[in-house]
Length: 79
Image (cartoon, rainbow, N blue to C red; front, side):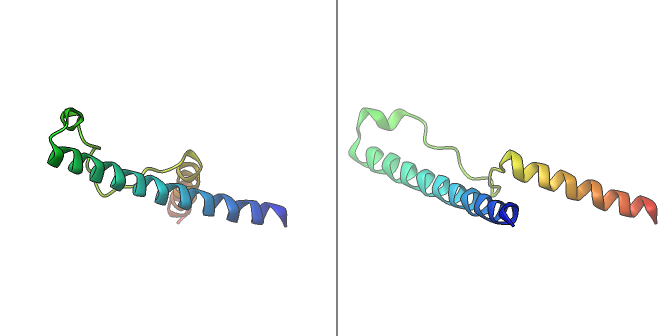
């Protein structure tokens, strides 16, 4: 079953990417804070956008969600 393994690897890589993106945002925020404390010229650059509580979704994840939603709506309509 190579497709199942590929799907698991893809899911794992997508989760890793999301985690690393969050870590990068945290590091960027800390760098900006240190620059503000030091009073350097780079501190005038806007900080990273604040989190809204939502993580970005990959196109593959959005496709899976859309397929699942269509399936749920079809089941509801059939009843």
